Length: 253
Image (cartoon, rainbow, N blue to C red; front, side, top):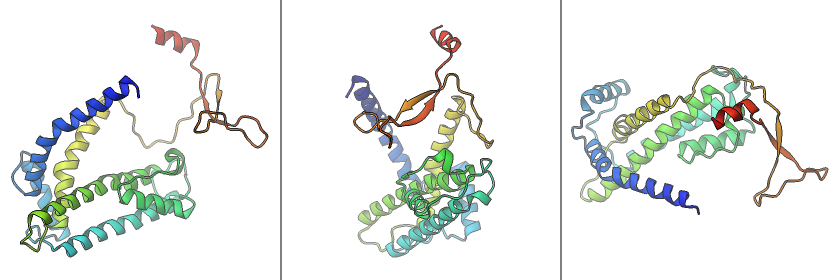
């Protein structure tokens, strides 16, 4: 490994180490339902969610109730994601008119993968998933599957600490508090950073770019050798543009 690679690992490790203690204390307060600096803003939203969904935030669950609630919350959205993928051609925000995800087992594998927070993508997202599928389906599971995992970890800790009690908390309360107090602030900060960096995001149809001096790139195998086609000649994978002399001159400046 290069020096740059080791340096990146070291910086990442130090960043994780630096936020572990303050973030750990903050999360302990959140899941112990102690007051935090975000309560004035998020607590009214939390109460509204419970009122709309009929959740009693003061009622705790046995481990069996907690597990059933978690499975129901995971299975139903997984089936919905599978359905969204299959019928995405008829859904909004699909300017490219992408057809439903095929074969069916690919859609099911993707739904199960994103529900379990493994996010295995055995497809090319830009030519397979519509904007609606990515936003309402995949991004939703990116968010909630992480919350479910954190909630289960908290329940496990409670189960170890509460050896004399029969309850381990309320799944719905843990899920909501994780989304509002932990994941949402991180996403807001991250989104603002991406906006600051000028990352594009829109719902328009794909732009067609006219390449300057297109250049075919040979397809390589795992060892770096060219892959041969049926005719024995090198197979080509993608087409990449070659920068014009003006662009190269501008870069040198």
